[in-house]
Structures are given as structure tokens and as C-alpha cells.
Image 1 (cartoon, one colour):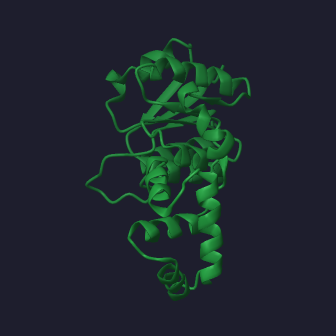
Image 2: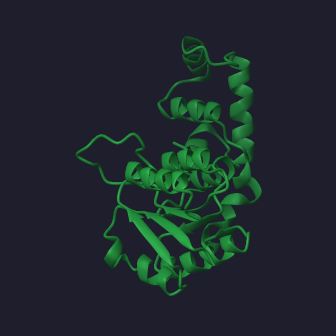
Length: 221
């Protein structure tokens, strides 16, 4: 089992139940950080001291700190942690359940597990820790659909740009103009039309209004 774990969580760690859940697994060292910058400093110090953490468990959102933070989210923290320590195992423990965000985190950040903060979150966190230790990927079963079938369609930043402006009421010609003004390519009206058509097909939307409604449910816009 892991010997040294860092928890990045802005809730009261001592009473959150996470500490108890992990202590049941007989992990010798469990440290806690309330903010991302603090967590990163702990990771860096441990790395420099040649006593690195084996696993980082992080929430995604953190309450505002009176002191400005360089790393504002768990996503930022995980990205920086992996630059520092590429082989560090990572688990996201969050209330976020939007398929697009889960897909993005699992694919782009290559986290080792995604645990949904739900009624069974603590129990599933223990399962996730064991799975990751065994070099197995874990995701809360209720969210597994986010990585399958049509929901695994690769939605790009370009797509999000189109969808946001479509939701704002812009037509394809106006969206094309916005793309050109920001020097984003492809920016032609035909390119916008083709990509929106592909998005509608992927999300089984019959029209732009339905496409906006569906992608909002997915957390894209």
C-alpha cells in the first residue's frame, strides 16, 4: 500500500471522514493542505528532500483565500504536480459530475482515478486508492458513462467557442466574424457550419436550440 499521501481539500479535513477512511487502510503518512499553493509546496519540499509523496488526492474547487494563490484549482495543482513529479499518482475527489469536465480531466491530465463526492464517496475513495495502487484506473460507477460512446467524442476549445457564441444568439456568419477578430482558424462560414453540423450529429440534436440545451447539460457551456 502507499506509504505517503497528500490530501488537497479546503473542507475541515479532520472531520471530513476522508482521514478516517484512509487511516483504515493503514497508510503511515497522510498529510493535508487546505489550498493548492500549500499543497504544491509540500509536494516540492518532499521531492527535494528525496521523500516524495506516492499519491495526491485533490478536490477541484477551493474557497477563495484572502492571500492571492498562484494555483487556483485542483486542476492547476495536478498539472503542476505532474511537471514536478511525472510518476506521481493522482486522484480527483470532487462534486463535479459533468461528463465533458470528467472526460477532459481523465484524458488531458491523465489522472489515475475520479471519485465523485456523493453519499458513497468515502467508500469509493478507499476503492480508488486500492485500485490506483494496483495500477488500475478507477472512476465512480455512476460517472463511467462520461468516458464511453458519444460522450467520449473529443470536444475542443474551438467547439466550446462556437457553442458559447451560438448560445449568445449569434448566427454562423457572426460567429465566423468573431473567430476572425480573434485570429482563430478555421474561421470561414463553411467551417463553422460543418463543425456545428458534426456537433449536432454527435449529440443527437435536431437544431441549434436543442444542441445548446444538450451541451449545457454536459457542462460544456
